[in-house]
Image 1 (cartoon, rainbow, N blue to C red):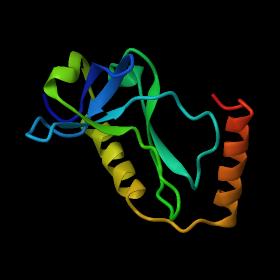
Image 2: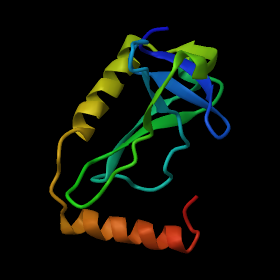
Image 3: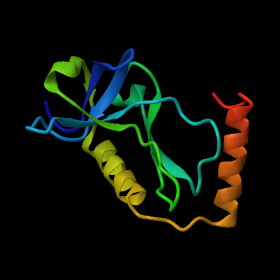
Length: 134
């Protein structure tokens, strides 16, 4: 197992993850492949597209939210053990790993909330409450 491999794991259901670190005593750092947001995320976060071009069985993204004071972002980063890995699904290219590294660096930088991003977050929260975002 090495960085850049894509594996199926079982969380609440079978899900696809990208290995971001190798296996060590603290586990394997992974990021879950999720469906694209389907809304404009500029100023809120970044998505790295992965899919058939990378040899994967479906199109998805690795999503990272930009941190902001008073806001706890969900980035789909987690740690798993070797036993959680079910089946290898593919390996990402070094170019795609570079995109992921860039996204992780960007997401690690604190950002000031602007009126535009605050309004966008409020609109997304309202849409979620009304069931308009899936």
